[in-house]
Length: 240
Length: 296
Length: 104
Image 1 (tube, chains in turn yellow, orange, blue):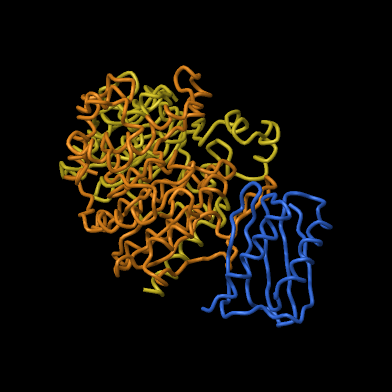
Image 2: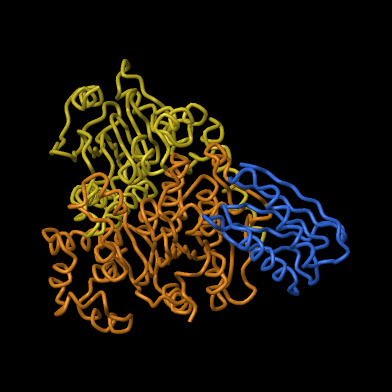
Protein backbone atom coordinates (compact mmCIF):
# COMPACT_ATOMS: atom_id res chain seq x y z
CA UNK A 1 0.00 0.00 0.00
CA UNK A 2 1.29 3.45 -0.82
CA UNK A 3 1.19 6.26 1.72
CA UNK A 4 -1.82 7.72 -0.09
CA UNK A 5 -3.65 4.38 0.02
CA UNK A 6 -2.90 4.08 3.71
CA UNK A 7 -4.09 7.60 4.48
CA UNK A 8 -7.25 7.06 2.47
CA UNK A 9 -8.00 3.84 4.32
CA UNK A 10 -7.24 5.34 7.74
CA UNK A 11 -9.00 8.63 7.16
CA UNK A 12 -11.74 8.27 4.53
CA UNK A 13 -12.98 11.76 5.42
CA UNK A 14 -9.60 13.31 4.77
CA UNK A 15 -6.73 14.53 6.92
CA UNK A 16 -4.78 17.65 7.85
CA UNK A 17 -1.27 16.43 7.28
CA UNK A 18 1.66 18.48 6.14
CA UNK A 19 3.58 16.00 4.01
CA UNK A 20 7.08 17.21 3.34
CA UNK A 21 9.94 15.65 1.46
CA UNK A 22 10.75 13.17 4.17
CA UNK A 23 8.46 13.65 7.15
CA UNK A 24 4.80 14.21 7.76
CA UNK A 25 3.20 16.11 10.62
CA UNK A 26 -0.36 16.88 11.51
CA UNK A 27 -3.61 15.33 12.55
CA UNK A 28 -6.76 13.70 11.31
CA UNK A 29 -10.19 12.66 12.43
CA UNK A 30 -10.43 8.95 13.15
CA UNK A 31 -14.03 7.90 12.56
CA UNK A 32 -15.83 6.77 15.70
CA UNK A 33 -12.98 8.05 17.81
CA UNK A 34 -12.14 11.66 17.27
CA UNK A 35 -9.06 13.63 16.31
CA UNK A 36 -5.69 11.98 16.55
CA UNK A 37 -2.14 13.19 15.98
CA UNK A 38 -0.25 11.79 13.00
CA UNK A 39 3.50 11.95 12.47
CA UNK A 40 5.88 10.00 10.34
CA UNK A 41 8.73 9.41 7.97
CA UNK A 42 8.05 8.39 4.38
CA UNK A 43 9.70 7.56 1.08
CA UNK A 44 12.43 5.48 2.74
CA UNK A 45 14.03 8.70 3.92
CA UNK A 46 17.10 8.73 6.15
CA UNK A 47 16.46 10.26 9.54
CA UNK A 48 18.98 12.97 10.39
CA UNK A 49 19.31 15.69 13.00
CA UNK A 50 17.00 18.18 11.28
CA UNK A 51 13.98 15.94 10.73
CA UNK A 52 14.45 14.22 14.09
CA UNK A 53 14.42 17.65 15.71
CA UNK A 54 11.26 18.69 13.87
CA UNK A 55 9.40 15.50 14.71
CA UNK A 56 10.50 15.62 18.33
CA UNK A 57 9.39 19.23 18.62
CA UNK A 58 5.89 18.25 17.57
CA UNK A 59 5.82 15.34 20.02
CA UNK A 60 6.94 17.60 22.85
CA UNK A 61 4.16 20.06 22.00
CA UNK A 62 1.66 17.21 22.03
CA UNK A 63 2.96 15.91 25.36
CA UNK A 64 2.63 19.38 26.90
CA UNK A 65 -0.78 20.02 25.43
CA UNK A 66 -2.50 17.65 27.82
CA UNK A 67 -4.96 16.59 25.12
CA UNK A 68 -4.19 12.88 25.64
CA UNK A 69 -5.01 12.11 22.01
CA UNK A 70 -3.42 9.09 20.37
CA UNK A 71 -0.30 9.60 18.31
CA UNK A 72 -0.08 7.54 15.13
CA UNK A 73 3.40 7.15 13.68
CA UNK A 74 3.56 6.17 10.02
CA UNK A 75 6.99 4.80 9.18
CA UNK A 76 8.75 4.13 5.92
CA UNK A 77 12.33 5.14 6.54
CA UNK A 78 15.86 4.04 5.92
CA UNK A 79 18.33 4.10 8.81
CA UNK A 80 19.61 7.19 10.57
CA UNK A 81 21.41 9.52 8.16
CA UNK A 82 25.02 8.42 7.97
CA UNK A 83 27.07 11.54 7.56
CA UNK A 84 29.88 13.47 9.15
CA UNK A 85 27.61 16.47 9.70
CA UNK A 86 24.98 14.51 11.58
CA UNK A 87 27.57 12.99 13.90
CA UNK A 88 29.33 16.32 14.34
CA UNK A 89 26.08 17.89 15.50
CA UNK A 90 25.37 15.03 17.92
CA UNK A 91 22.87 12.77 16.16
CA UNK A 92 22.66 10.55 19.24
CA UNK A 93 21.16 13.50 21.14
CA UNK A 94 18.50 14.10 18.48
CA UNK A 95 17.48 10.48 18.04
CA UNK A 96 17.43 9.87 21.78
CA UNK A 97 15.40 13.04 22.27
CA UNK A 98 12.81 11.88 19.73
CA UNK A 99 12.63 8.46 21.37
CA UNK A 100 12.34 10.00 24.85
CA UNK A 101 9.57 12.30 23.69
CA UNK A 102 7.53 9.45 22.24
CA UNK A 103 8.04 7.26 25.29
CA UNK A 104 7.22 10.08 27.68
CA UNK A 105 4.10 11.00 25.70
CA UNK A 106 3.07 7.39 26.13
CA UNK A 107 3.72 7.52 29.86
CA UNK A 108 1.73 10.76 30.05
CA UNK A 109 -1.43 9.14 28.72
CA UNK A 110 -1.16 9.24 24.95
CA UNK A 111 -1.41 5.99 23.05
CA UNK A 112 1.55 5.90 20.71
CA UNK A 113 0.99 3.46 17.86
CA UNK A 114 3.47 2.97 15.06
CA UNK A 115 2.42 1.55 11.71
CA UNK A 116 5.37 0.31 9.74
CA UNK A 117 4.46 0.34 6.08
CA UNK A 118 7.85 0.43 4.43
CA UNK A 119 11.36 0.22 5.76
CA UNK A 120 12.93 1.14 9.05
CA UNK A 121 16.48 0.44 10.14
CA UNK A 122 18.95 0.78 12.98
CA UNK A 123 18.87 4.10 14.82
CA UNK A 124 15.81 5.39 12.97
CA UNK A 125 13.92 2.23 13.88
CA UNK A 126 14.81 2.61 17.56
CA UNK A 127 13.92 6.32 17.71
CA UNK A 128 10.54 5.96 16.00
CA UNK A 129 8.81 2.60 15.59
CA UNK A 130 10.43 0.99 18.62
CA UNK A 131 9.64 4.00 20.83
CA UNK A 132 5.91 3.47 20.36
CA UNK A 133 3.87 1.54 22.89
CA UNK A 134 2.56 -0.62 20.08
CA UNK A 135 4.13 -1.46 16.73
CA UNK A 136 2.13 -2.99 13.90
CA UNK A 137 3.01 -3.48 10.25
CA UNK A 138 1.54 -3.94 6.83
CA UNK A 139 2.67 -6.91 4.75
CA UNK A 140 5.75 -6.05 2.78
CA UNK A 141 7.14 -3.81 5.49
CA UNK A 142 10.83 -4.32 5.96
CA UNK A 143 12.31 -3.63 9.38
CA UNK A 144 15.98 -4.37 9.93
CA UNK A 145 18.96 -3.64 12.10
CA UNK A 146 21.35 -3.86 9.17
CA UNK A 147 21.04 -5.21 5.64
CA UNK A 148 22.67 -8.55 5.03
CA UNK A 149 25.37 -7.34 2.62
CA UNK A 150 26.58 -4.81 5.19
CA UNK A 151 26.39 -7.42 7.92
CA UNK A 152 28.44 -9.74 5.74
CA UNK A 153 31.09 -7.05 5.35
CA UNK A 154 31.28 -6.27 9.05
CA UNK A 155 31.22 -9.89 10.27
CA UNK A 156 33.51 -11.00 7.42
CA UNK A 157 31.15 -13.84 6.60
CA UNK A 158 29.88 -14.50 3.06
CA UNK A 159 26.28 -13.47 2.44
CA UNK A 160 25.41 -17.06 1.53
CA UNK A 161 26.60 -18.18 4.95
CA UNK A 162 24.49 -15.54 6.69
CA UNK A 163 21.47 -16.47 4.60
CA UNK A 164 21.90 -20.09 5.56
CA UNK A 165 22.20 -19.28 9.26
CA UNK A 166 19.18 -17.00 9.01
CA UNK A 167 17.08 -20.05 8.16
CA UNK A 168 17.85 -21.47 11.59
CA UNK A 169 17.02 -18.42 13.72
CA UNK A 170 15.07 -15.15 13.63
CA UNK A 171 17.61 -13.49 15.90
CA UNK A 172 19.66 -11.42 13.46
CA UNK A 173 18.37 -11.19 9.90
CA UNK A 174 16.12 -8.44 8.52
CA UNK A 175 12.42 -8.90 7.91
CA UNK A 176 8.98 -8.59 9.34
CA UNK A 177 8.67 -12.23 10.41
CA UNK A 178 11.90 -12.02 12.40
CA UNK A 179 10.98 -8.78 14.12
CA UNK A 180 7.55 -10.21 14.91
CA UNK A 181 9.01 -13.38 16.32
CA UNK A 182 11.44 -11.49 18.55
CA UNK A 183 8.54 -9.48 19.95
CA UNK A 184 9.00 -6.10 18.26
CA UNK A 185 5.98 -6.22 15.96
CA UNK A 186 2.70 -7.02 17.69
CA UNK A 187 0.70 -7.92 14.60
CA UNK A 188 0.52 -7.58 10.86
CA UNK A 189 -2.50 -5.73 9.56
CA UNK A 190 -4.58 -6.85 6.64
CA UNK A 191 -4.47 -4.48 3.67
CA UNK A 192 -7.84 -5.87 2.58
CA UNK A 193 -9.71 -4.60 5.61
CA UNK A 194 -10.24 -0.93 6.43
CA UNK A 195 -7.21 0.32 8.32
CA UNK A 196 -9.24 2.67 10.50
CA UNK A 197 -11.11 -0.31 11.92
CA UNK A 198 -7.87 -2.07 12.70
CA UNK A 199 -6.55 1.04 14.41
CA UNK A 200 -9.75 1.37 16.43
CA UNK A 201 -9.38 -2.21 17.59
CA UNK A 202 -5.88 -1.45 18.85
CA UNK A 203 -6.99 1.73 20.59
CA UNK A 204 -9.67 -0.26 22.39
CA UNK A 205 -7.00 -2.42 24.05
CA UNK A 206 -5.64 -0.64 27.09
CA UNK A 207 -1.92 0.07 26.91
CA UNK A 208 0.15 -2.35 28.93
CA UNK A 209 3.63 -2.31 30.37
CA UNK A 210 6.34 -3.20 27.90
CA UNK A 211 5.84 -6.90 27.31
CA UNK A 212 7.84 -7.21 24.11
CA UNK A 213 10.38 -9.42 25.81
CA UNK A 214 7.67 -11.78 27.02
CA UNK A 215 6.14 -11.78 23.55
CA UNK A 216 9.53 -12.67 22.14
CA UNK A 217 9.74 -15.59 24.56
CA UNK A 218 6.23 -16.83 23.73
CA UNK A 219 6.97 -16.68 20.03
CA UNK A 220 10.31 -18.38 20.63
CA UNK A 221 12.24 -15.57 19.01
CA UNK A 222 14.04 -14.34 22.12
CA UNK A 223 14.36 -17.34 24.39
CA UNK A 224 16.16 -15.73 27.34
CA UNK A 225 15.54 -11.98 27.52
CA UNK A 226 12.32 -11.92 29.52
CA UNK A 227 13.50 -14.49 32.04
CA UNK A 228 16.88 -12.81 32.53
CA UNK A 229 15.31 -9.39 33.10
CA UNK A 230 12.79 -10.86 35.52
CA UNK A 231 15.52 -12.70 37.42
CA UNK A 232 17.54 -9.49 37.78
CA UNK A 233 14.52 -7.74 39.28
CA UNK A 234 13.94 -10.64 41.65
CA UNK A 235 17.56 -10.69 42.80
CA UNK A 236 17.70 -6.93 43.19
CA UNK A 237 14.54 -6.73 45.26
CA UNK A 238 15.65 -9.64 47.43
CA UNK A 239 18.94 -7.95 48.16
CA UNK A 240 17.57 -4.48 48.89
CA UNK B 1 46.68 7.04 38.70
CA UNK B 2 44.65 4.10 37.39
CA UNK B 3 43.52 4.47 33.81
CA UNK B 4 39.79 4.05 33.22
CA UNK B 5 40.51 3.28 29.58
CA UNK B 6 42.76 0.35 30.48
CA UNK B 7 40.54 -1.05 33.20
CA UNK B 8 38.20 -3.98 32.76
CA UNK B 9 34.48 -3.71 33.47
CA UNK B 10 34.98 -5.41 36.84
CA UNK B 11 37.90 -3.17 37.72
CA UNK B 12 35.84 -0.06 36.94
CA UNK B 13 33.01 -1.26 39.17
CA UNK B 14 35.49 -1.96 41.93
CA UNK B 15 37.00 1.51 41.53
CA UNK B 16 33.62 3.26 41.71
CA UNK B 17 32.07 1.22 44.50
CA UNK B 18 32.69 1.73 48.19
CA UNK B 19 34.93 -1.14 49.40
CA UNK B 20 33.21 -4.53 49.53
CA UNK B 21 29.84 -2.98 48.63
CA UNK B 22 29.35 -4.52 45.20
CA UNK B 23 26.96 -7.46 44.86
CA UNK B 24 26.64 -8.93 41.39
CA UNK B 25 23.34 -10.15 39.95
CA UNK B 26 23.59 -13.13 37.61
CA UNK B 27 27.35 -13.44 37.90
CA UNK B 28 29.62 -15.62 35.80
CA UNK B 29 28.96 -18.67 37.97
CA UNK B 30 25.37 -18.68 36.69
CA UNK B 31 26.70 -19.18 33.18
CA UNK B 32 23.85 -17.26 31.54
CA UNK B 33 25.59 -17.22 28.21
CA UNK B 34 24.41 -16.19 24.78
CA UNK B 35 22.24 -18.88 23.18
CA UNK B 36 23.14 -17.57 19.73
CA UNK B 37 26.91 -17.30 19.41
CA UNK B 38 27.41 -21.03 18.94
CA UNK B 39 25.63 -20.75 15.58
CA UNK B 40 28.56 -18.59 14.50
CA UNK B 41 31.13 -20.73 16.29
CA UNK B 42 32.06 -17.78 18.45
CA UNK B 43 33.20 -18.09 22.06
CA UNK B 44 30.88 -16.98 24.83
CA UNK B 45 31.68 -15.10 28.02
CA UNK B 46 29.99 -16.26 31.22
CA UNK B 47 28.56 -12.80 31.98
CA UNK B 48 27.79 -12.11 28.26
CA UNK B 49 29.94 -9.01 28.40
CA UNK B 50 28.13 -6.97 31.04
CA UNK B 51 28.49 -6.95 34.81
CA UNK B 52 25.44 -5.73 36.71
CA UNK B 53 24.58 -5.44 40.36
CA UNK B 54 24.13 -3.15 43.32
CA UNK B 55 26.74 -1.17 45.16
CA UNK B 56 27.27 1.86 47.32
CA UNK B 57 28.97 5.04 46.22
CA UNK B 58 29.90 7.44 48.99
CA UNK B 59 27.52 5.50 51.21
CA UNK B 60 24.57 5.80 48.82
CA UNK B 61 23.01 2.60 47.43
CA UNK B 62 22.64 2.37 43.69
CA UNK B 63 22.54 0.01 40.72
CA UNK B 64 25.59 -0.28 38.55
CA UNK B 65 26.24 -1.83 35.16
CA UNK B 66 29.56 -2.06 33.33
CA UNK B 67 30.02 -3.24 29.75
CA UNK B 68 33.18 -5.17 28.95
CA UNK B 69 34.42 -3.46 25.80
CA UNK B 70 36.92 -6.19 24.95
CA UNK B 71 34.29 -8.94 24.62
CA UNK B 72 32.82 -8.63 21.14
CA UNK B 73 33.47 -4.90 21.28
CA UNK B 74 31.03 -4.58 24.17
CA UNK B 75 28.23 -5.22 21.71
CA UNK B 76 24.72 -5.68 23.05
CA UNK B 77 23.27 -9.16 22.67
CA UNK B 78 20.13 -10.76 24.06
CA UNK B 79 21.37 -11.66 27.54
CA UNK B 80 23.62 -8.61 27.87
CA UNK B 81 20.73 -6.31 27.03
CA UNK B 82 18.25 -8.09 29.25
CA UNK B 83 20.54 -7.78 32.28
CA UNK B 84 20.53 -4.00 31.86
CA UNK B 85 16.78 -3.88 31.19
CA UNK B 86 16.11 -5.82 34.38
CA UNK B 87 18.51 -3.65 36.38
CA UNK B 88 16.68 -0.50 35.30
CA UNK B 89 13.28 -2.02 36.13
CA UNK B 90 14.58 -2.86 39.59
CA UNK B 91 16.06 0.60 40.02
CA UNK B 92 12.70 2.17 39.28
CA UNK B 93 10.91 -0.08 41.78
CA UNK B 94 13.42 0.76 44.48
CA UNK B 95 13.95 4.40 43.52
CA UNK B 96 17.72 3.87 43.35
CA UNK B 97 19.95 5.72 40.89
CA UNK B 98 21.80 3.83 38.18
CA UNK B 99 25.33 4.16 36.85
CA UNK B 100 25.86 2.80 33.35
CA UNK B 101 29.52 2.32 32.46
CA UNK B 102 29.35 2.32 28.68
CA UNK B 103 31.89 0.51 26.53
CA UNK B 104 30.06 -0.62 23.43
CA UNK B 105 30.15 -0.59 19.66
CA UNK B 106 26.37 -0.95 19.60
CA UNK B 107 24.10 -3.86 18.75
CA UNK B 108 25.77 -7.30 18.45
CA UNK B 109 25.15 -8.19 14.83
CA UNK B 110 25.00 -11.95 15.40
CA UNK B 111 21.98 -11.23 17.63
CA UNK B 112 20.95 -8.03 15.90
CA UNK B 113 17.20 -8.18 16.46
CA UNK B 114 17.55 -9.05 20.12
CA UNK B 115 20.16 -6.34 20.58
CA UNK B 116 18.00 -3.75 18.85
CA UNK B 117 15.00 -4.71 20.97
CA UNK B 118 17.09 -4.48 24.10
CA UNK B 119 18.18 -0.94 23.21
CA UNK B 120 14.55 0.09 22.79
CA UNK B 121 13.50 -1.61 26.03
CA UNK B 122 16.38 -0.04 27.92
CA UNK B 123 15.52 3.43 26.63
CA UNK B 124 11.93 2.94 27.73
CA UNK B 125 13.00 1.84 31.21
CA UNK B 126 15.32 4.82 31.56
CA UNK B 127 12.56 7.25 30.59
CA UNK B 128 10.09 5.62 32.98
CA UNK B 129 12.61 5.59 35.81
CA UNK B 130 13.55 9.21 35.22
CA UNK B 131 9.89 10.23 35.03
CA UNK B 132 9.82 9.13 38.68
CA UNK B 133 12.94 11.10 39.53
CA UNK B 134 15.46 8.27 39.35
CA UNK B 135 18.89 9.38 38.13
CA UNK B 136 20.55 7.37 35.36
CA UNK B 137 24.14 8.45 34.81
CA UNK B 138 26.34 7.35 31.94
CA UNK B 139 30.13 7.10 32.01
CA UNK B 140 32.00 7.00 28.70
CA UNK B 141 35.72 6.39 28.39
CA UNK B 142 36.45 2.85 27.26
CA UNK B 143 38.16 1.53 24.18
CA UNK B 144 34.93 0.59 22.40
CA UNK B 145 33.40 4.00 23.00
CA UNK B 146 29.64 4.46 23.08
CA UNK B 147 28.32 3.83 19.61
CA UNK B 148 25.10 2.99 17.82
CA UNK B 149 22.36 1.87 20.14
CA UNK B 150 24.69 2.65 23.04
CA UNK B 151 24.73 6.27 21.91
CA UNK B 152 20.94 6.33 21.93
CA UNK B 153 20.80 4.92 25.44
CA UNK B 154 23.37 7.50 26.53
CA UNK B 155 21.14 10.22 25.11
CA UNK B 156 18.42 9.16 27.57
CA UNK B 157 20.64 9.48 30.65
CA UNK B 158 20.16 12.31 33.13
CA UNK B 159 23.87 13.09 33.08
CA UNK B 160 26.88 11.98 31.04
CA UNK B 161 30.51 11.87 32.07
CA UNK B 162 33.22 11.52 29.43
CA UNK B 163 36.99 11.49 29.19
CA UNK B 164 39.17 12.59 26.28
CA UNK B 165 39.45 8.94 25.22
CA UNK B 166 35.69 8.54 25.20
CA UNK B 167 33.75 8.58 21.95
CA UNK B 168 30.00 9.05 21.54
CA UNK B 169 28.29 8.60 18.21
CA UNK B 170 25.55 6.77 16.35
CA UNK B 171 27.09 5.58 13.08
CA UNK B 172 30.72 4.63 13.48
CA UNK B 173 33.28 6.31 11.21
CA UNK B 174 34.08 3.05 9.38
CA UNK B 175 30.42 2.52 8.55
CA UNK B 176 30.05 6.12 7.34
CA UNK B 177 33.11 5.61 5.17
CA UNK B 178 31.81 2.30 3.77
CA UNK B 179 28.48 3.86 2.92
CA UNK B 180 29.53 7.34 1.83
CA UNK B 181 33.23 7.17 0.98
CA UNK B 182 36.41 8.42 2.62
CA UNK B 183 35.75 11.97 1.53
CA UNK B 184 32.70 12.00 3.73
CA UNK B 185 34.61 10.47 6.63
CA UNK B 186 38.15 9.12 6.55
CA UNK B 187 37.81 6.63 9.37
CA UNK B 188 41.57 6.12 9.55
CA UNK B 189 42.10 9.77 10.43
CA UNK B 190 42.14 9.37 14.20
CA UNK B 191 42.33 13.06 14.84
CA UNK B 192 39.19 13.54 12.77
CA UNK B 193 37.41 10.73 14.60
CA UNK B 194 38.12 12.41 17.92
CA UNK B 195 37.23 15.90 16.67
CA UNK B 196 33.80 14.59 15.62
CA UNK B 197 32.97 11.92 18.19
CA UNK B 198 35.47 12.41 21.01
CA UNK B 199 35.02 13.59 24.56
CA UNK B 200 36.26 17.15 24.10
CA UNK B 201 33.94 17.93 21.19
CA UNK B 202 30.97 16.33 22.95
CA UNK B 203 31.70 18.40 26.03
CA UNK B 204 31.98 21.61 24.03
CA UNK B 205 28.61 21.21 22.29
CA UNK B 206 26.82 20.17 25.46
CA UNK B 207 26.24 16.55 24.51
CA UNK B 208 27.80 15.55 27.84
CA UNK B 209 27.94 17.21 31.22
CA UNK B 210 31.29 16.33 32.79
CA UNK B 211 34.71 16.06 31.21
CA UNK B 212 37.26 14.17 33.27
CA UNK B 213 40.79 12.86 33.14
CA UNK B 214 41.30 9.24 32.23
CA UNK B 215 41.41 8.03 35.82
CA UNK B 216 39.14 5.87 37.94
CA UNK B 217 39.17 8.49 40.64
CA UNK B 218 38.13 11.29 38.30
CA UNK B 219 35.17 9.23 37.08
CA UNK B 220 34.25 8.40 40.64
CA UNK B 221 34.28 12.04 41.73
CA UNK B 222 32.24 13.08 38.73
CA UNK B 223 29.71 10.33 39.40
CA UNK B 224 29.27 11.49 42.99
CA UNK B 225 28.74 15.01 41.73
CA UNK B 226 26.30 13.91 39.03
CA UNK B 227 24.26 11.95 41.56
CA UNK B 228 23.50 15.11 43.48
CA UNK B 229 21.87 16.83 40.49
CA UNK B 230 18.15 16.62 39.67
CA UNK B 231 17.36 13.89 37.19
CA UNK B 232 13.62 13.97 36.62
CA UNK B 233 12.37 13.78 33.07
CA UNK B 234 9.08 15.44 32.28
CA UNK B 235 7.49 17.41 29.47
CA UNK B 236 9.06 20.66 30.69
CA UNK B 237 12.56 19.17 30.67
CA UNK B 238 11.88 17.81 27.18
CA UNK B 239 10.73 21.23 26.05
CA UNK B 240 13.92 22.78 27.40
CA UNK B 241 15.96 20.11 25.62
CA UNK B 242 14.02 20.79 22.42
CA UNK B 243 15.03 24.42 22.64
CA UNK B 244 18.64 23.51 23.34
CA UNK B 245 18.81 21.16 20.38
CA UNK B 246 17.13 23.66 18.07
CA UNK B 247 19.64 26.28 19.19
CA UNK B 248 22.51 23.92 18.44
CA UNK B 249 21.22 23.45 14.90
CA UNK B 250 20.73 27.14 14.33
CA UNK B 251 24.18 28.00 15.73
CA UNK B 252 26.17 25.23 14.07
CA UNK B 253 23.95 23.48 11.55
CA UNK B 254 25.69 25.07 8.56
CA UNK B 255 29.19 24.21 9.76
CA UNK B 256 31.01 21.11 8.58
CA UNK B 257 34.19 21.09 10.65
CA UNK B 258 34.59 20.70 14.38
CA UNK B 259 37.12 23.54 14.52
CA UNK B 260 34.56 25.85 12.93
CA UNK B 261 32.08 24.93 15.65
CA UNK B 262 34.67 25.55 18.35
CA UNK B 263 35.47 28.87 16.77
CA UNK B 264 31.79 29.78 16.61
CA UNK B 265 31.55 28.91 20.32
CA UNK B 266 34.11 31.60 20.98
CA UNK B 267 37.28 29.59 21.51
CA UNK B 268 40.19 31.73 20.41
CA UNK B 269 42.52 28.86 19.46
CA UNK B 270 40.39 25.96 18.27
CA UNK B 271 43.34 24.17 16.67
CA UNK B 272 44.98 23.87 20.10
CA UNK B 273 42.04 22.11 21.72
CA UNK B 274 43.08 18.51 20.98
CA UNK B 275 46.49 18.94 22.56
CA UNK B 276 45.30 20.59 25.76
CA UNK B 277 45.59 18.52 28.91
CA UNK B 278 42.37 17.97 30.81
CA UNK B 279 42.65 20.81 33.31
CA UNK B 280 43.75 23.31 30.70
CA UNK B 281 40.89 22.20 28.44
CA UNK B 282 38.38 22.65 31.24
CA UNK B 283 39.69 26.12 31.96
CA UNK B 284 39.68 27.06 28.29
CA UNK B 285 36.16 25.81 27.66
CA UNK B 286 34.46 26.92 30.86
CA UNK B 287 33.09 30.20 29.58
CA UNK B 288 32.26 29.17 26.03
CA UNK B 289 30.96 25.60 26.01
CA UNK B 290 27.29 24.75 25.48
CA UNK B 291 25.78 23.23 28.58
CA UNK B 292 22.78 20.96 28.96
CA UNK B 293 22.23 21.40 32.69
CA UNK B 294 18.66 20.40 33.36
CA UNK B 295 17.66 20.27 29.72
CA UNK B 296 18.57 16.65 29.08
CA UNK C 1 33.64 -24.81 19.35
CA UNK C 2 35.70 -27.60 20.81
CA UNK C 3 35.02 -28.67 24.38
CA UNK C 4 37.87 -30.22 26.36
CA UNK C 5 37.77 -31.67 29.84
CA UNK C 6 40.66 -32.58 32.12
CA UNK C 7 40.46 -34.27 35.46
CA UNK C 8 43.40 -34.18 37.88
CA UNK C 9 44.11 -35.78 41.21
CA UNK C 10 46.26 -33.72 43.52
CA UNK C 11 47.35 -33.74 47.15
CA UNK C 12 47.80 -29.96 47.25
CA UNK C 13 44.65 -28.18 48.28
CA UNK C 14 44.06 -24.64 47.05
CA UNK C 15 44.61 -22.23 49.94
CA UNK C 16 42.53 -19.30 51.05
CA UNK C 17 38.87 -18.78 51.80
CA UNK C 18 37.30 -17.45 48.66
CA UNK C 19 34.67 -19.57 46.97
CA UNK C 20 34.99 -18.10 43.53
CA UNK C 21 37.24 -16.05 41.30
CA UNK C 22 36.93 -14.74 37.75
CA UNK C 23 39.81 -13.41 35.69
CA UNK C 24 40.36 -12.42 32.08
CA UNK C 25 38.20 -11.52 29.13
CA UNK C 26 37.15 -13.48 26.07
CA UNK C 27 38.94 -11.53 23.40
CA UNK C 28 41.39 -12.35 20.67
CA UNK C 29 44.51 -13.80 22.28
CA UNK C 30 42.86 -13.79 25.70
CA UNK C 31 40.66 -16.03 27.81
CA UNK C 32 38.33 -15.95 30.78
CA UNK C 33 38.92 -18.28 33.71
CA UNK C 34 36.19 -18.96 36.25
CA UNK C 35 37.37 -20.78 39.37
CA UNK C 36 34.90 -22.32 41.80
CA UNK C 37 35.88 -24.07 45.02
CA UNK C 38 33.29 -26.82 44.72
CA UNK C 39 35.15 -30.11 44.46
CA UNK C 40 36.57 -32.58 46.94
CA UNK C 41 40.02 -31.37 48.07
CA UNK C 42 42.00 -33.91 46.08
CA UNK C 43 40.40 -33.12 42.75
CA UNK C 44 40.85 -30.45 40.15
CA UNK C 45 38.56 -30.38 37.14
CA UNK C 46 39.23 -28.13 34.16
CA UNK C 47 36.86 -27.62 31.26
CA UNK C 48 37.61 -25.52 28.23
CA UNK C 49 35.54 -24.15 25.39
CA UNK C 50 37.72 -23.03 22.50
CA UNK C 51 37.21 -22.09 18.85
CA UNK C 52 40.71 -23.31 18.05
CA UNK C 53 40.37 -27.00 17.30
CA UNK C 54 42.99 -29.67 17.68
CA UNK C 55 45.11 -28.19 20.46
CA UNK C 56 44.22 -30.84 23.04
CA UNK C 57 47.82 -31.90 23.62
CA UNK C 58 48.92 -28.29 24.11
CA UNK C 59 46.20 -27.69 26.68
CA UNK C 60 47.11 -30.92 28.41
CA UNK C 61 50.73 -29.83 28.66
CA UNK C 62 49.89 -26.36 30.00
CA UNK C 63 47.40 -27.72 32.51
CA UNK C 64 49.66 -30.51 33.70
CA UNK C 65 52.36 -27.95 34.29
CA UNK C 66 49.87 -25.77 36.18
CA UNK C 67 48.78 -28.67 38.41
CA UNK C 68 52.40 -29.55 39.12
CA UNK C 69 53.27 -25.99 40.17
CA UNK C 70 50.16 -24.73 41.95
CA UNK C 71 47.97 -26.04 44.74
CA UNK C 72 44.66 -26.45 42.91
CA UNK C 73 42.89 -29.18 44.87
CA UNK C 74 39.15 -28.63 45.23
CA UNK C 75 38.92 -26.25 42.29
CA UNK C 76 36.59 -26.48 39.32
CA UNK C 77 38.10 -24.35 36.58
CA UNK C 78 36.04 -23.29 33.56
CA UNK C 79 37.64 -21.55 30.62
CA UNK C 80 36.24 -19.67 27.66
CA UNK C 81 39.14 -19.29 25.27
CA UNK C 82 39.51 -16.53 22.68
CA UNK C 83 42.57 -18.09 21.09
CA UNK C 84 45.14 -17.43 23.80
CA UNK C 85 48.73 -18.60 23.61
CA UNK C 86 49.98 -21.09 26.21
CA UNK C 87 51.84 -18.46 28.22
CA UNK C 88 48.69 -16.33 28.49
CA UNK C 89 46.73 -19.38 29.62
CA UNK C 90 49.35 -20.11 32.26
CA UNK C 91 49.28 -16.49 33.39
CA UNK C 92 45.50 -16.41 33.79
CA UNK C 93 45.46 -19.69 35.69
CA UNK C 94 48.10 -18.35 38.06
CA UNK C 95 46.20 -15.06 38.47
CA UNK C 96 42.99 -16.96 39.11
CA UNK C 97 44.49 -19.18 41.77
CA UNK C 98 46.10 -16.17 43.44
CA UNK C 99 42.67 -14.52 43.56
CA UNK C 100 40.92 -17.52 45.08
CA UNK C 101 43.69 -17.88 47.65
CA UNK C 102 42.73 -14.53 49.10
CA UNK C 103 40.88 -14.55 52.34
CA UNK C 104 37.20 -13.76 51.90
